[in-house]
Image (cartoon, rainbow, N blue to C red; front, top):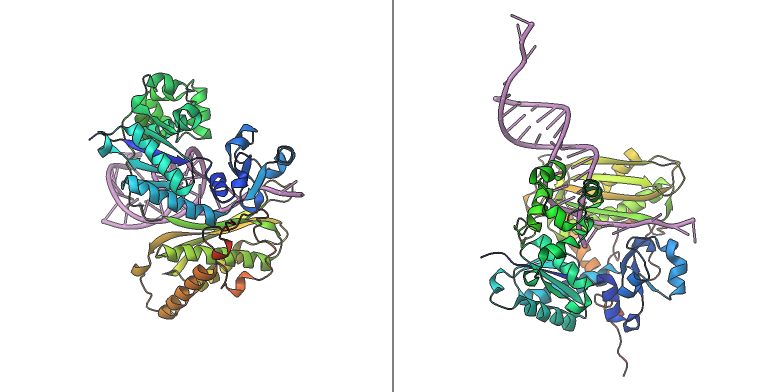
Length: 422
DNA sequence: TCTGGGGTCCTAGGACCC
DNA sequence: TCTGGGGTCCTAGGACCC
């Protein structure tokens, strides 16, 4: 059975989520900002039409935002995560062979569906997701993932396609690939794009026709796979059972610069607590932790960044042990006299929590600690994250990430349920 | 004078993704 | 004044072992 992939991708996902619960945003330019209201991370079509680029700092386009009455929102990850789940559950109804690829897109395997009219099926999927979740999606269909990505792009950018494009039904594929810029191919980043253009390869078609040796030598095995996929040879399979996590990170830019070890301790404590929650949610324990901090690279002030990697004596998932280690780490790298902008912790060497090797001389009471963590997570899930927290995370939190224009958590907080008035 | 070969593990860095 | 966060995979090189 020759493979068939569909890529279903939500249109302007964060902006669309906001619109579902706030219809006043309909037909207006909308942008969603990153943490600390720093950069634009999502744009409605109207905002794109104004020339607002992805990733641009908000302060640089402030006059434009004002002039066009652009609706500006802080990001609301609780809302987007929940909406993502609804979209994925809807897709699953159509096709159990589903790989959620990111918060706003999923690959479907339609290999067993070739007797159907794939284009029509795509339209049914699209209409149902819209009806059930309110989120508009685009569907691209082809025989490899890389080509499905391209098909999806075509679906999105060609309004008369109605949001679905089936590459199998394309009469002149070379012509189509010839119109796709090489830097727009999935897997070609800025570095490889620059290199390829220097060598006269500027379109997906030219990349498709490049020599295997040349690609292997300059872009490695990953690049070669990508080119094979462009040629219609499927090398990237649908990954249905997600591989176990390799790492868990929590890092944030500070709302205000941190200049004291006390504040740094608080920030790193709370990031460690957050990362530990994620760790327990995955039922993992950590053996190695990296702590890092850095100054503001955009500022003309003295620069410093450093990181330290600590091996934990026993793999653990308990917040207080991890905080203790993190604070030790911070002491090794913190230097007075800098304006710190960001810090974080990364857990690597993750193992299933059930397989922790206990040290013979281990002095921790593991059973007690496990009960405490279970209770802590339960309270914070029920009453909101941060209801219970460690004293070392501090109270004032002048460094805390800022969200001045956040929408309510419409779907995950009873108090924020939208109210319909008759 | 003549200085093997192959394997594993770890780490750092680069490239990419959304 | 104001510039995000969280991941993956691959590769090269060094340490170490037999």
